[in-house]
Image (cartoon, rainbow, N blue to C red; front, side):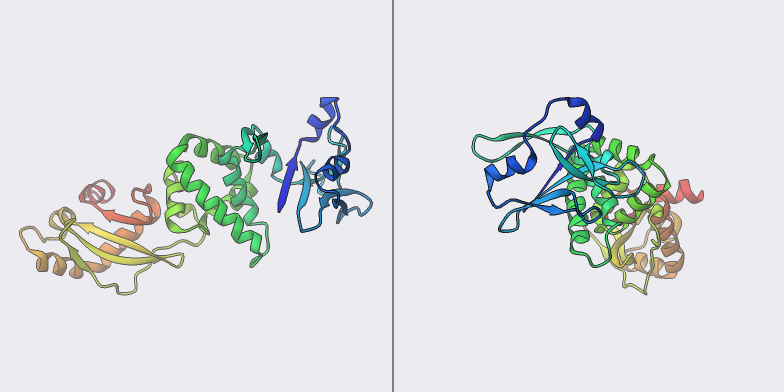
Length: 296
């Protein structure tokens, strides 16, 4: 029920050609369309609403004056609401088709730019605001798909936004920290960043029970980070090589784990926070990590 149409102001001026006035075009679709007064300048309209709740908003990147006053889009014969971060979103759009009738050819934001933009915008909405949760959900689903199918696009869009300045970086990382652990870790893996870049993250342990997993030959235990459980494990080889369980059976390896529990948890914390993400949503301590990281 919400359609956003965006255009760079300089592009709108440079085009030269014009459509019919926007309200005239919209009324051909639905005669109930009416202009809605802009919140900054009530004499101008940047949105149009129809009976039943359908709304069409016209947007343009801001000019950094921070006045929020509407700006003219001559090619579309309407005013538009300037928005921060929009220039990043609508640069280099991709072709798509609206699935209606024979199809309607349109340009839409590149998926990677859209996902990163949603992370940023989510941090600028008030806590508890419904659209904030929607922004994060959209970002989460799209980022996971991009990391799998178009990882280069995701990394490129992330790096471009990251270089736009400290405020952009702060909003991106804060938004990333609010995603579900699996989606968050997939992104961190894609951009080659450790979990420690996330504000307030730590891995803690509340005396978790340990068990031996025969299928993987590991001892498993559970930690917590940012309110979510983290499945942790240490391999049999790591216990044998570094914690004196060589030649022992299941009970002996569990005993070796419990005897060195505090030290192993400290190692798990160090790997979880500072090492590159290997397994989204979990971690495994291998003997190679202990040898290279701690020289043991």
